[in-house]
Amino acid sequence: MIHSGFKPGGVVDTNAKIKAVFIYNFTKYIEWPKAYKEGEFTIGVVGESPLYSELTKMTQTKKVANQPLQVKKFNTAEDLSKCHILYISRDKSAQLSSCIKALKNNSTLIVTEDNGLVDKGAGINFIIKDNRQKFELNKGNVERYKLKVSSNLEALAFSVK
Image 1 (cartoon, rainbow, N blue to C red):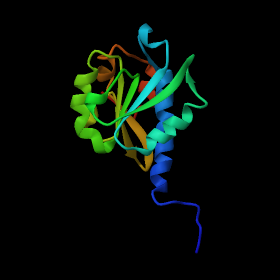
Image 2 (cartoon, rainbow, N blue to C red):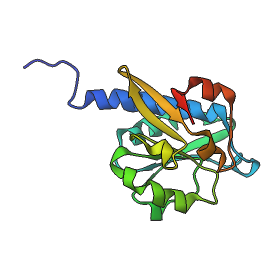
Image 3 (cartoon, rainbow, N blue to C red):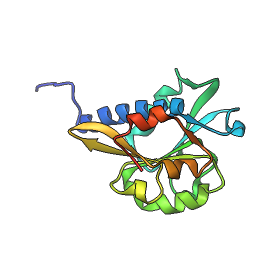
């Protein structure tokens, strides 16, 4: 038997690592309101995703400014609690509008990974272009949650709406 070191779905895991790094880096280019700058910095994940375990690994070594990082898993929009960033996995994309309703009074960056979701309310949507991980940014959707977007983030985005 040949052991190549790759497990089935290895590609997905690599992608999850890349997305986790992107999500962590978004925290450097977005400013949350004062009330969100104390206590834990929370990243929520809706649905099953290898990204959850990648983000959880980061909580051991990373902080956002001076805030400890924590990751919470949610199954549905009804379960949502306050979080700084909410990642909606592809298999839960249909819940975007319910998540938006649930978070309307919060300052949450909503991150998705399905075509067209930046037009339906997501702030950032992961896309693949030329076999590379990129993201689209909808500045209006981000600012609606009282978040400030750095022009550096706009420069990094594949497209800005």
